[in-house]
Each structure stands twice: as structure tokens, then as C-alpha cells.
Length: 169
Image (tube, rainbow, N blue to C red):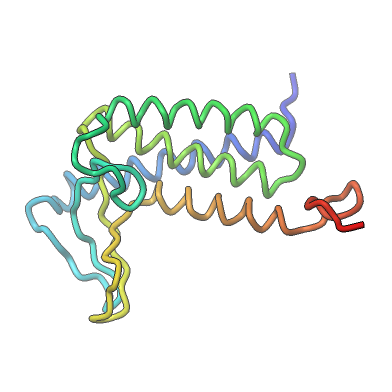
């Protein structure tokens, strides 16, 4: 049985993102031992800073009100929807974006199950200017890039004619 090339791309990106996410977290926790070091400056705009995110994106719902298994279950339900959508992806951009989002989400679910929180360690800033102080991981990056790709795809006219958005009469 031959798999559709778009689905194959989505599955490949899912696997690549998941492996890269988990390998980078393993390196941070055990190879670099960032929990012991706390913070390592890599560039003037990049630090490796160890944090445990018990909430969702950008620390929302942080504080234990919603447990890691509940958040993980919600994420897995969303991933199931993404895989259903992947089966119907009309182009390579959408298929790749869905695979990247799913890989990042599953990587974070694995953290929630293993540690009760997500390992975050990438901190980008502009010198001393750091108004948000967000720390994230490779899986988070894949999710954000995937969502951006879906938004970009939604702005392009579809190949079936006309814009995807409803056109004014």
C-alpha cells in the first residue's frame, strides 16, 4: 500500500520533531545538567535556562489547578484531530505544519507523563530588554512554526479557484 506523499511528509515531520524535542530535553537534563547549572549564556541574545512549565503555552494555567494528565489528555485529543486533518491535507505546507504541531504536542505530553511538567530551556531576548521572559523548547517552536504555516496557507488563494475566505459579492 502506497502512502500519499503529503501524509508521508506530515508523518516524517512528526517523527523528526518528536525525536529532536525529546533528545534536546534529555541533553539539557542529563548531558548538560542544566538543572544544576541553572543558566548558560550561549549568545548575547540566547540563554539556556531551565524551567518546568506545569501549565500550558507561556505558562497559562500554571499552578496545579489542572493536572498534567488532564492537560496531556487534551493535547492527545487535539493530536488525534490533527492526524485526521492530515489525512485530508490539500498541500505539502499544511501536511508539514500538522506533522510539526503534532510532534511538538506529543513531545510535551511525554514530559507531562514522565515529569509532571514540561521541560523548557530556550530563552531568547534582546540584550537586557526582555519584556515577556518566555522560556520554551523545540516542541513549542515546532508548534508555533506549524501554526504560522497554517495561517500563511489560509491567506493564499486555494488551487480550486477563489480565495479560501468568503469573497464579497
